[in-house]
Amino acid sequence: AQKITQTQPGMFVQEKEAVTLDCTYDTSDPSYGLFWYKQPSSGEMIFLIYQGSYDQQNATEGRYSLNFQKARKSANLVISASQLGDSAMYFCAMREKSFGFQKLVFGTGTRLLVSP
Amino acid sequence: DADVTQTPRNRITKTGKRIMLECSQTKGHDRMYWYRQDPGLGLRLIYYSFDVKDINKGEISDGYSVSRQAQAKFSLSLESAIPNQTALYFCATLDGNVGNEQFFGPGTRLTVL
Image (cartoon, each protein chain N blue to C red):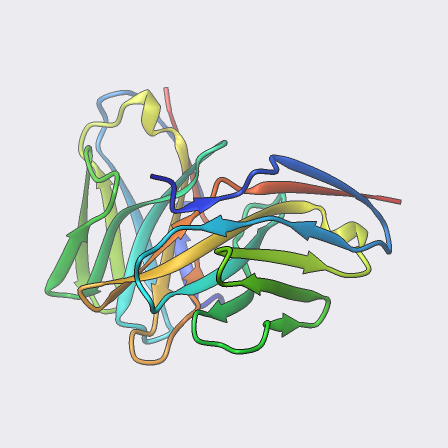
């Protein structure tokens, strides 16, 4: 079964507008973490934001915020005021503890294109 | 200097050849990982290591082996490369005591002809 589902293969947004990238997850572990990574065309993986399963408030990092809805098992990334440099692949990932060891499971990604 | 380095950054090889991809880190992290990325499939875990004496298979370990020569070094080997191992390979590290974030290397693009 898919642990992390990103249903949007591609998204388009105009510069300065906000965009939401969807992510749903599946786990039976009460302790887990959710991550978003950005991968520009150069290929590196850039950490954006983290949300723990016990965190009461939604995580925010600058223009990035994570809309965490635990009951719905969703962890959508919201990018406010999009910039041209935001064009990239975005991956949602989940940390699960397996015998005390942390592994990340990734979704298939969403390609975001920001237009002028 | 980068905290997590991978060598080589690009490699083209032929079917049947033995290939080693190397990863080094200066972050002092105990945990290291190897992932491969294929278009449309995201990143998938090949192997991971808790420390130099702990090596574990990930979800797609067939055709690969690893060596944790030191805390700072984690190598991935393809004993006999095949074309469907053509992919982008990432090494990552994590501080198991405090970490949430995995730190990724720049990736190695491997092409098997």
